[in-house]
Length: 482
Ligand code: URA
Image (tube, rainbow, N blue to C red; front, side):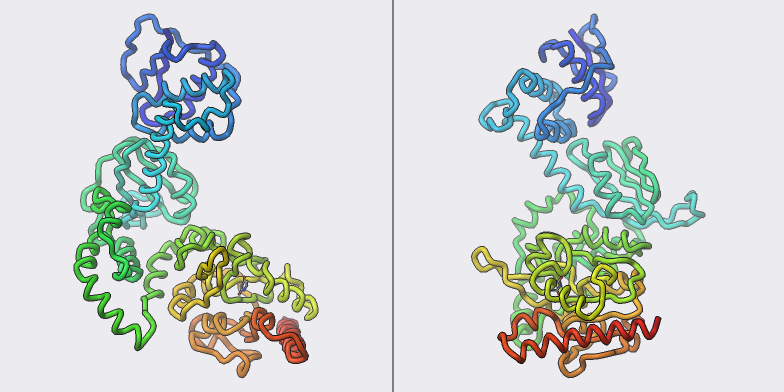
């Protein structure tokens, strides 16, 4: 009989080590006591396993399943995984395809429960701002603390997600099964914690979340049953925005009616500045940090594949701002790679601007579309949506520090000026600094997709030549200024 002592919680490294020994010695699953923690062995004459056995090569999906299932609370998890691995090393390499196999089925359920728990922790954990009297950064330094009660031992597994998302904050995540502490440089994994008293008192971060939630809440979509399924009541206690839910549900019918009445008169208004500013209180210190925040944010428009970030060198003399990523950009995750982007590349070359030396970005970072069968048809962002993304654009440009910002089309011009610009009438140099939104010398020109929409002919060719002339002029302005 063999005894394996693993740490409490999810001891992936310990399990892997034990597995090597068990496989090397060809031990039957029934011969192993996975005691774990300090539990006494049920077997007096337990033998310890060799520690230096070679790694066990496993198919990737089996490795991924192990990583997930070790996080489950089920005390039988290690024994079940050992059974699985033994069958794999004995030749059943495609075992996970046999969904009806009782062992595979049971492990799949454990895996699903862990994934769901991870999703809940990613989505429903909320930081609260506290002043830390003992901070190494000085008494009263800002620190964020979150309390969460996961169902399984997932705390360490969530660490990469939170480090990436909140890299620029000092934070602690406390749970009854372990804690994580991040000081902007290194992560420490700590013991289980008790819920701190008064966490949600005097809390600007929580307030920001609540405002954001309220501003994005659509009363017309209220479905309390679905809301509870997606956001079980258990998590409400830790969610600042949950305080607003009952009132928002109660007032939903009246708000829907008001929306219907207001719709005819004016487009729906959100409060994008407040919402994004609240979300962005992390104050990213670098472009990379900002990009991490953008990448982690939900698209304003559901269905987009990913945020498409700006591309090009920081310190580029010219920044070129488009409207939003198109279908191809959304899939590839890079700006201006589709048909309009190709036309832009050609025009830049003819104007003497090296594309790779310019900084290319968009006013809106997610693709907005309507699905028509398999096709995704571009939809222009509303003024509110442009405003929602503007904080990021301004921050982005402040990191890039271009000498000239060239806007392509009306949406980009709206983002930089805060007003509706008639591109064909106002094209040319424009001081964006006078708008109070940012302080850049600007240049307004048409969007390349406008050129693509013109019917082929002399007018289209002239429009293209005018576009190249605009870009050339922009280059000369920069060279003159330089
Ligand atoms: N159009 C844009 O405005 N931006 C892109 O990235 C691609 C097409």
